[in-house]
Each structure stands twice: as structure tokens, then as C-alpha cells.
Length: 293
Image 1 (cartoon, rainbow, N blue to C red):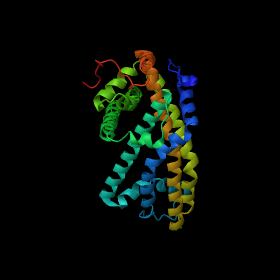
Image 2: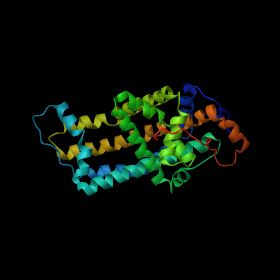
Image 3: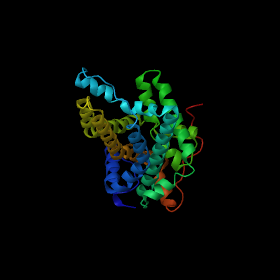
Image 4: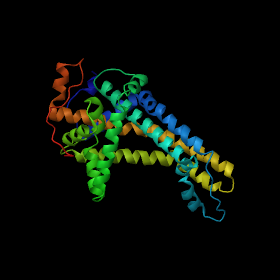
């Protein structure tokens, strides 16, 4: 095990530092895990541009034209009909689940001093898609339900459930059990989760501005030339793909590192792992208090 990746309780700054250290040292691995599934989404988005009907508004101000054109990718899905919309949703979910799960497995192996490849990380998702889909749906419903009671409860629940995906995959838990597990682990640690989320969304916002906004302005300025608008829209999809691939792994890596830190703090995971370093990752103690019951 690398000296700078030893298992011990970490401060928030150390969690973030280890996140970016893992990402930087294994940049090709994490970008590859995210990019390969998301190439399917890029292909669907680029195909949409061929069927989009651009609004004809020659007298519309440039900024209003920009705002109207920014929503064109979603209109493109409807150009294929509801069948195309369904296919697009399925493609997005599959890509999202593979990239999330593959990243969690890669972080786990690297964090515990092992090695893993892009293919092996994605390959470990075989047989896990339905379970992780259930975790994702239940997680979304829990956050949405809390958000109905105002924004702050929704944010709080999201912060408490930040480790549900690592818990589901690394401890082989079902959807409900993984959410309850995350809620237990993150007790008294919602503030650290919030900082992780906040940093991620700031980075994503900056990357989106850098890689997409120039093309959206070009779309607005090409309002009288549908061919150029289509070309700029395709480039904006590529920009969105690049931004997502570069920033997407950061949240999953941070959540996985945070998951291990919480287990070290609350369950002496470091001692459990030292006693059985070559075996399966030890799971938490039974009798997890329920959140959803």
C-alpha cells in the first residue's frame, strides 16, 4: 500500500487532496472508465442534431436566441418520437451506471494498494446494473421527496446519501440497505458531504462554461444559417462530453474516498483490512438502523 494512501482518519482537506491525487495519478484510467460508456450518449446526441428543426426568429435578440437554442438537444430526442426518447434515456442510464460503478471499483482497488485496468473496472459491473439502477432510483426518490419539503431538506438528504453507491457495490447491498447504510455512515458528517458536492458543482459549472458556452454563442450568431447552427450544435455536444468526462469522475472518487474514511473512523476498517488484506472487503456490522422504515 502506498505511503500516501494509507488507511487512517482524514480531515476534509485530506479527503479532497487524496481525491485529486488519485485522479491525477490515474487520469487515463478514470477518464477512460467515464468516456467509454459516455461515447454512447455522445453518439445519440450527435444523431439528434440531424433531426432538429431550428426556430426561425430573425428579429430575435442574440441573447434570447442563445437561450432558446440552448434547449435544442432535448428537442432532438423528441425528433425520434417517444421510442427515440426511451432509447435515449436507456442509453444515458446504462452509461451513467457503468461509469459510476467502474469508477467506484477502480477507486477501491487503488485505495487499497492494488492495480486495476479500465476493462476490469467496467467488467465488474456485469450483473450489478439492475441493483445499481435500483439504488439510483431510490436515491433520487428520497432526495426528491425531501425536496418537496423545501430545498434545504433535499440537500441534507443528498449529503447523507452520498456514499450509497460505494456501499451498494463494495458491500453487495440492495437498494434500500445501501441507502440505510449511507445514512448511518454519514451521521454527523453531512457538512463534509456538502463541501464535496459544492466543489464538484463549481468545477462542473466552470467546465461547462469553458467547453460549451462558446459554441452556444456561435449558434446564436448563426441564426440565419441552419447548416452552421447544426455544426455548432454538434460541437457543443462534443464540448459537453469533454466537460462531463473530465469532471464526472471527481464526485465518485471523492464519495468513495469519503466512504472509506467513514468506515475507518466508525468501524476500524483499517484494522479489519490489515487482518485480511488479500480477502474480500469486510462489511459493516449487522443491525444497521433503518432510515426508510
